[in-house]
Length: 223
Ligand SMILES: Cc1cc2nc3c(=O)[nH]c(=O)nc-3n(C[C@H](O)[C@H](O)[C@H](O)COP(=O)(O)O)c2cc1C
Image (cartoon, rainbow, N blue to C red; front, top):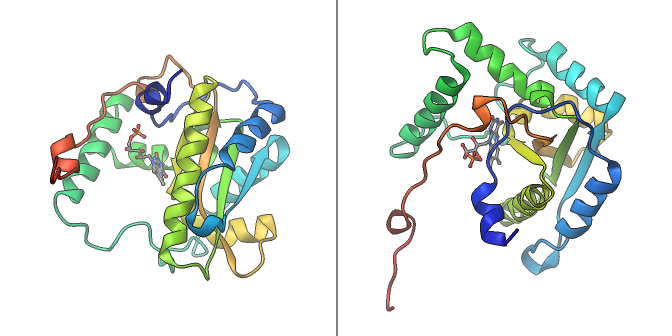
């Protein structure tokens, strides 16, 4: 598989088979991923990988915390600004509509949509969860660096026929995750990632996705 193929084939997987992922496979992926670049090579990142009973405990913790006051609605690092502007707002809306159409959930069925959101916290059935940890004291550059690591992991999984879904949804459980993982006060989970074997029978893993064009993405000057 070429890098281009891996980039084009990777897509967010939101339905997994229960087939386990071997620790050796994951170690191989992370052994390659640690070569992702970071500014000044400071590698201000850490990953907590969970499977088996530990995965189940994290899932249980999240499901039990859902809807309780302990679920942080006002995080110090919110995922999105409060009023997303155009065209970002429409892109977000389009993704949601495309995804719920694939899931067969109509717009007015709010309980079913919420049930799907809750599937995030079951890792969409994936046997492995990765949690990407960042230090609160870093500058914004290091958050971008962490993104390099996350996408590198995703492409290496793709190369091995595995799938993943990056999950900022887990940001809603930062205090609970920090407690569960015993993180020092300066560290926090940036986002999670569900990892496993994609379920090929599920339309949610196959709906068409959109992207802006190269000319919307980039300005070419001086060529
Ligand atoms: C950092 C990050 C966090 C994300 N968090 C979630 C999430 O919590 N739940 C989810 O279903 N998808 C999540 N996504 C997936 C995006 O919705 C997805 O990448 C986007 O719609 C593009 O689709 P694609 O990944 O299939 O190409 C996240 C993506 C990124 C990069």
